Image 1 (cartoon, helix red, strand yellow):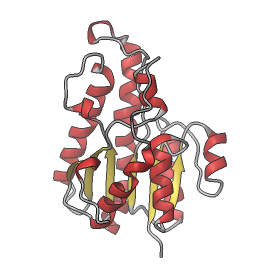
Image 2 (image 1 turned 135 degrees about the vertical axis):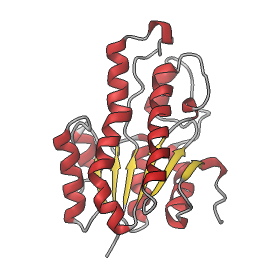
Image 3 (image 1 turned 90 degrees about the horizontal axis):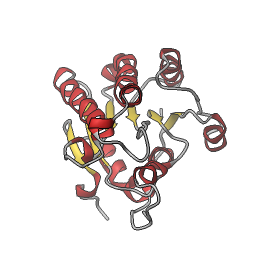
Image 4 (image 1 turned 120 degrees about the vertical axis):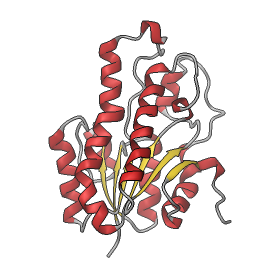
Length: 224
């Protein structure tokens, strides 16, 4: 039976590229995004559109994967940048920061919690898409960066607590996506690589199944 992956934020950008890569490699998919039209246009048979902040939506994703056999891989890719241009920490609106944390930290953790019984039983894996903003002090990245730092550390602890499950924190690097453009409004980001360029490294990670840890996709040695 084909393995089953849940990929969040799969209507565009990195999530779309990763989902396409998994599908081409023979995975069954359950995909999520808030844009129901864009998601269904790309994934008519595996789309479960909704807001990850909703417990009902998270339950629907896991139920859809369970109907296919169970969760072998959970890719927590969906996220938001926050206000654009990004405010300094001293000026960050707390309501906006709360939303950034709800989407980037609490929602993926809630999905992990629901998927864990299946992941444990199937020796599955969790991918938390992160950023160098989680570990570097870039001016203007206090909201998004601190949220990614929080979900990274939660994933780090999860790896220690769940030895039967692989837990990978994956930094894809700067890519030419809409979110990255929002981070640099008015600037030309055409020098950044497209999301598709990191798919081989991602598939290599998922296939070789190294120990839980943090990985920069650019650093992975992918056989030619």
